[in-house]
Image 1 (tube, rainbow, N blue to C red):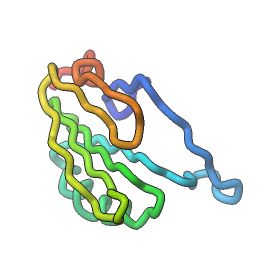
Image 2: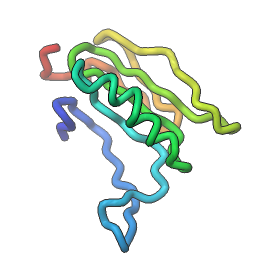
Image 3: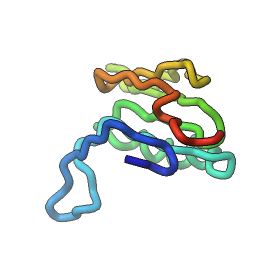
Image 4: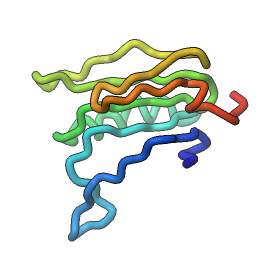
Length: 113
């Protein structure tokens, strides 16, 4: 599967509201692909809006123009914590909300960054 030019091997479809089919219920993980032109908005107003989603536990930013993934997670006290940035094709990224680790060379396979 290709998601905004980033190959995604694993994709979970969360439950949706019956009254509003475009509304995802109990969202725990959100992955955003950003570019130079969208980075400020993705880190600022969008992330601020996402933090208001009570069920959200992890926000992941995948760079479109370099081999880099960053993430933030909400701890048990409700505080958002910045995780160490993972960069380079030899790096691995693990989610805090899923028992899943991705190799960046697989995520960016076939892309020229």
